[in-house]
Each structure stands twice: as structure tokens, then as C-alpha cells.
Image 1 (tube, protein in one colour):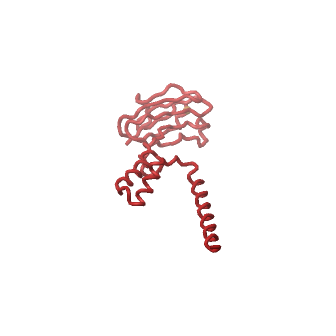
Image 2 (cartoon, protein in one colour):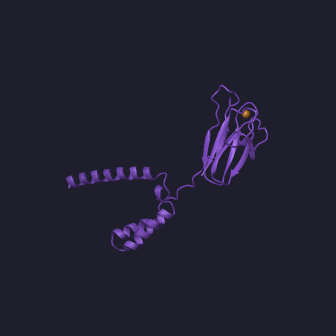
Image 3 (tube, helix red, strand yellow):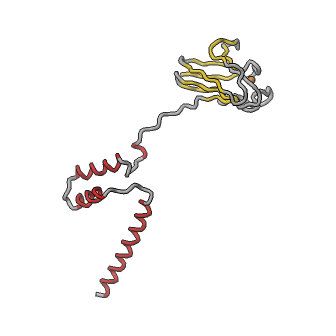
Length: 174
Ligand SMILES: [Cu+2]
């Protein structure tokens, strides 16, 4: 009798420890509905069918009680279609190249240029020989100003700043 009550005490202790760690794990999870617990119990006892048990798990996934990361739809790829004109871009000896110097985007992307430099710049599309063409041509952009252009056709597009013509950048559309 004494031995069995000792065994009981150990069992209770083990049970208590496992209950504590379980409730800690579940502290941030959503509550599991009572009927789900019953379904699990009844499934274990052979009262409900495997189909019902699996439906219950489906319910838990659909209602995000169980979250499985790789089942979720991949988020649409956000194309970073921004070109920063960095501080110091005006300086012919500096390294203030457009960032990125060659922006690669899919067809239909709207590209935004942002002037982060302390002086005005513009964006002028140029042909292969460096001559300005009327395709995407911005007014002077002061610090913080933006300019947008949507590229509807594939190609490699060159541009420069007419104030600082040594600053040539590329947009590659594919
Ligand atoms: Cu410039």
C-alpha cells in the first residue's frame, strides 16, 4: 500500500510537470475548442471515424489554431522598383552612383527615382550614343522629390542627369 501511494505520487508529479510545460507552450496559441478535444478523445476510443478526426484537424488548420507556415500562399513578390540618387551623387569624384546603378524589373513596372542628394538632379532618358531622347524625362528634382515612369516594353534603358552628365544609370526591363 505504501509503495503504491509512492508510485502514485510520482505519477502525479510527472503529470503535473507535463501539464505545466504544455500550458506554457499553448499560452500564446489560440484556444482549442471543446468539441475538438472531445473528437480527439472519441477518436482515441474508436467512437468517431478517422474521417471525422481528419476533418477536425482540417478545421484547426483552416481556423489557424494550427499554423503551418509552408502551406500559406507565398506573398506576392514585391519588386523594389526604386532608384535612389544618393547624397553626393553630384560630386564627379565621389562614389555616389545611382542605387542600384542597373535596376532590373519586369515589364509593366513603375520605377520611382528619389533624390536623396543635397542638390537638384533630373532624370533624362538617353540613347546608346548618350543623346537625350523624349521617353522618361523629369523636371529638376529637389532633395526628397520623386519621379515615376512605367516601363511597358522590354529593353535596356539608359538615363543621366543633365546637370551632372557623368552620372549614367540603367534600367533593364525583361
Ligand atoms: Cu544631377
